[in-house]
Length: 447
Ligand code: SF4
Image (cartoon, rainbow, N blue to C red; front, side):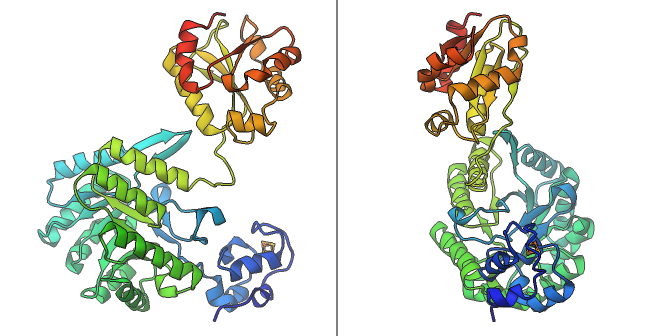
């Protein structure tokens, strides 16, 4: 039976230290009772307390780790259904399939392509995290060979996709130390797969024919000792997959239904990369913990990773860059000096456009608490006084022989006041949109 906040509170240290991100122990107890926090957020609960809190201390969606070391991928442990309630913590892992009937060279080539699905966007690394080796029904030896070749070709954690316990057993011999995700236990093989997962200490995916069967199976394999589970409802049609993923998450978070309190996995279908990107994006939005795709085209994968990055960014904390002076290229003393805000998307767009202009320059980035130019201006976070202070503090004055400052066209209204604040500087009004920067620097800029 679920414990109330007051019952939970009795077992907390009552020091109100705030390390759990709640201001008081009672507030933390309320978060726990509402399944919006996990007990391990408080480092001071005694073992007796943990034992007494029992189910209340378990996160509503279990944290499951695939892989080891720097490459490990953490799934689940989410506490809210909607991103606007709080934030999502463990981004959906993206896995790409490799067929086991490829020869070793073919597997190596495919895995190398997967490893290259690794990009930088707004200062953050976004990439594919898992390699899923799919059994092509050529027997345990062939599957084990393919898994070994894939494992040797990359440090990325693996998903071993076979319904045959003997194939999984053979494959685990070469890679169990990398803690792959075993996919999948079904009604036909549940106990054999549970034993393999338990003995190897690996997470196990469970696939039902529907949600009811899935819940039964998850209880069966967890009773057999496989505790780190990932759920697959078995649906493959897009609408049904979204419905099932939503139901699984709702049952776990809103009803505390333990058999469905695990991360989930979804698969794209078909060969069209556009369709796969559309499916994967939908499953990331609602609410897959792992999405398995079958395409390696960067133009199809990058939008999936970009969408994921946006969904898993904290909505209350815009992605920011450090507010300081940046050099784009190797600017000399006649280089242009531009001003922008520290919202990552704004800064990296400006940086990209200055780079594209082939005119090296300085960019003075003002701390606007991660807001874009117009928002910052409207909120009085980008005023003439603030810009002037940042320009003086940046030291750019000592780096250039001119005194010309280019401000975004959207805040042209600041130019007069800024000239008063920055005595001796000429304020130039640049383009309103960053995309106008290359043309402006090439055609209009003069030191
Ligand atoms: Fe209380 Fe623990 Fe939170 Fe500190 S970290 S306020 S002791 S619940």
